[in-house]
Figure 1 (cartoon, rainbow, N blue to C red):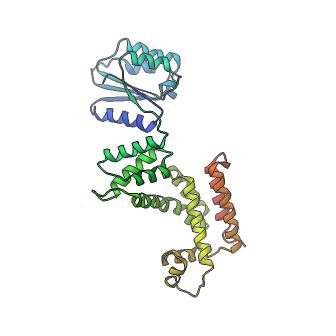
Figure 2 (figure 1 turned 45 degrees about the horizontal axis):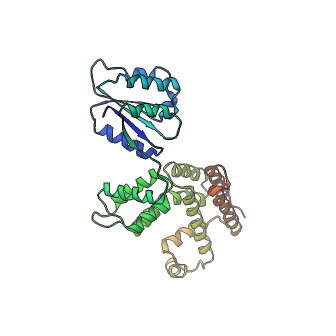
Figure 3 (figure 1 turned 180 degrees about the vertical axis):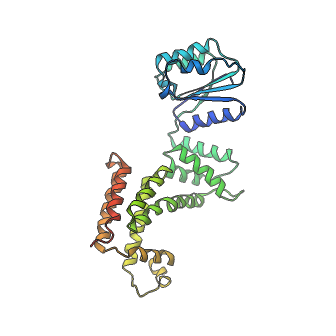
Length: 314
């Protein structure tokens, strides 16, 4: 393996290639060097021969950002490599750092492609490859449903494939219903946690839940959808007779009794005007996170504060 060049901007594929190489060499001593912290001499020290002749792996990511001096240290090493050292280099593509890439290739590096996946056809191939790797089968419609909902983030798409393969019974073809159930679960365990805190007027808790949801990969659009769905449910239930039991209202409102009971609890402290103002605020937040605002997360935080503090007002 001596010298490996990973080339392309897709971080998931680059990280996966590095992980596979490390897994294939479990006893090796691994050194990972971050280009934003490299000073002249660091690379030379890392690539210097070991006194103990141990097998080593040195990983240098994003070499297109190396200074000319640091690039020269790699070039110098290529002229006299250590037989016990495996050097992994990741270049994100483009013309920056191309001279170094050319020298690495000329030195006989194994090249692994990690090109960015942008086209739907490439994403479909990626998804099918993930399920094949996991020993599962997925329908064409389910592949497209996954791409439609998560296609902008390859890491999230890969995580969804793993989760679906784990959740769906062995031997069953993964279909659109399975993808829909997965998506609903994502919203319920994240977006609806935020929505519940907002509608209960728990502003601090709502903001903490929002940050946790975003940090774990939940799209702000899904969070807005969850809050909007909860407000619509409250508005629907508010117009129903309080004298009727939730079981009797279920068929009339088209929702399960537990959801009606929950909405009735949340309605406590909410006036019609406050609900109406919240709908307007939420509509603006939806526009903001879809491009009208420079910082979608901040726009959503602001909306959450406004809506949650509206509870108890006229």
